[in-house]
Length: 101
Image 1 (cartoon, rainbow, N blue to C red):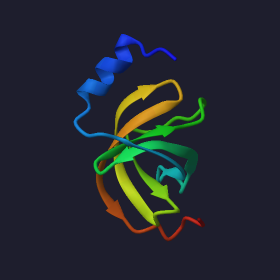
Image 2: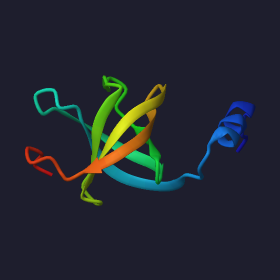
Image 3: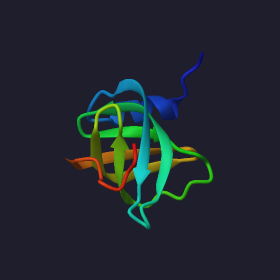
Image 4: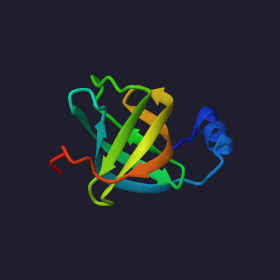
C-alpha cells in the first residue's frame, strides 16, 4: 500500500486526530423533512468525514443524525471529494421529532 504526498499533506494539516468509525447516519436537510443516508468513516470532537452516495446533493449546512449516538450534529461542510465530505460540528440537537429512526 502506498500513500501519496497529497494524503500525507492532508493528514499534517488536520488539527485533531480522527478516530476511525463506521456509523450509519442520515443527513437531514430540513427541506420537506428530507434525508440522505450516509456513513461516518472517521470522527473527532469537532467534525467528521462522511461517505455519501455519488448522486447526492448535500447543502453546505445540515443536521447529521446518528441513531447509535441518539444525537443530531449541526454541521458545516468544510471540503468535498467525489463521494466524501468533511464537516465541522457546530453543536448538537435532540433527534428531530419528525425523523422516524
